[in-house]
Length: 271
Length: 279
Image (cartoon, rainbow over all chains, first blue to last red):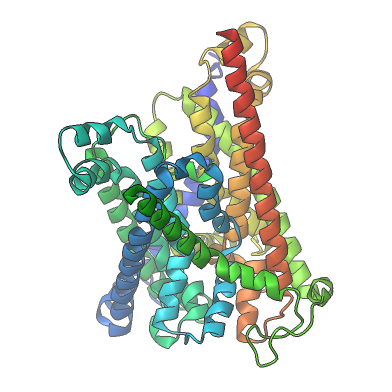
C-alpha cells in the first residue's frame, strides 16, 4: 500500500472538519427546521406565517429601516472623522485614532448601560430616539475603522495630481478620494447593517415596545415558547439577506478602483 | 489665516465626537465612587467612597458571571488561536479548496449573530435527540461556540503575517530532518508569534463582547456571563456595583491597548534602526 505523504496543507484539515460540523451543518438544520411544523411533519406553514402574519413582516421591514438609518448616520459621522484623522497634522498621532477605537474593546452591554445612565440624566425618554443614539454609539467604531484604514493607506499623489490638473476640493473628493475609499465604505456598511438585526440587547435596554428588532423576536421564539419552526423560517430569511449583502459588497469591492494593493480592512480590526 | 481656521474647526470636530464617545464612560467611572443607587437621582453624587468596589466582590452571582466570562474568553481564545494559526498555515500551502474554506470562514464572520445563535441552539437539540450525545448547554458548550465564532478572526489576523514569510522555510525544516509537526512548531510558529498574540487578543475581546450567541446557548441552569447577567438583571434590580466592574474593565482595556502600542512602536523603531545600520 502506498503511504500518503504528509503535506503542509493538511494543517487546515481539522478546521475543515470543524467547519462542516459546526458552521455548515447548523445552517442546514435551520433550513430543515424551517420546514417542520409543530406536529413534526413537513410543512410550508412557517414561511406562510413569516410573510402573511403582519407582525412578522412589519418587524422585518422596521428592522431593515432601523439598520439602514443606523448605517447612514454612522457613515455621515465616521467618514468626516476618518478624513480628519487621516489628514495632516492629525495623521502623526496614532494614539488619536486609537482613542476612537478603544471603546469597541469594552463589553458592549456595559457600554450601552453607561449610555443609558447618561440619557437618563439628560432626561431623554427610552424609545426610538434613545435606541438610535444607542445603535450609532455602539456601531460607530466599526464604520470608522475600515474607512480610516483605507484613507491612511491611500497614495497622496492621486489627490495632488487632481489638484495639479485644476480640480477644486469638492471635485477631488467626489472624483478621487471617495471612489478610492469605496472598499472601506462597503466594508464598514457590512459591519454595521447586518449586525443591527441581532442587536436586540440595545433596543431592550434603550427602546420601548415599538422599537424591537427581528433578532429579539427570533430569540424569544426559541426561549419563551417552542415555536422553533417559525423562528427557523425567520432565521432563514435573515440568512438570505446576509448572502445578498455579502454578494453586493463583493460585487462593489471587485469593481471599485484601487490605489494600490489595499490593506485588508477586516483584518485591520486587530491591528 | 484660513488654514488656521480649518485646523481649529477640524480639532473642534474631533473633540466633539470624542466627547460624545467618552461622556457616558466618564460618567460611569465618576459614579463608581458614589454609593448612590441611581446616577442623576435626587441625592446627587453623595459622598466619595470605594464601597461599590467592595460590594462587587460580595455579589456572588456577578462574581460567578465574571469568572464564567473570563474562563470562556481565555479558553476559547486559546483554542481559536491554535486552530486559526494551524489553519492559516494549511491554507497558505493549500492549492485546491482554499477558496471554499475561506468562503465558509467568511460566512461565520458576516452571518447575522442571531442566525449563528439559532444554528448552535438547533445543533445542541440535534446532538441530544438524534445522535444521542447528551449535550449540556452551559460553559462547555459556550466555549465551543465562541471558539468557532472567533477562529475566522484569528485566520484573518495571522494569514497576512504568513504571506511575509519565506515560503521555503517549512521545506527547509523538513530537509534538516524535522517532522511536519516539529517543523511547524520550531520553524514557522515562532515567526508568527506577533500575529498569534493579536489574534488571541481579538478572539478574547470578541468572546467578552458576545451577547446574542451566549444568551441563546447558556442553557437553563443559571449559567451567565457578564453580558447576559447584566441584561437579565436590568428588568429586576441592577446592582450599582456594575459601575465598579465597568470601570475596572475599561481601565484594563486602556492599559493593555497603550502597552500593546508602545511595544509595537518600540519594535518598529528597532527594526528600522537595524535596517539603517545594515544598509
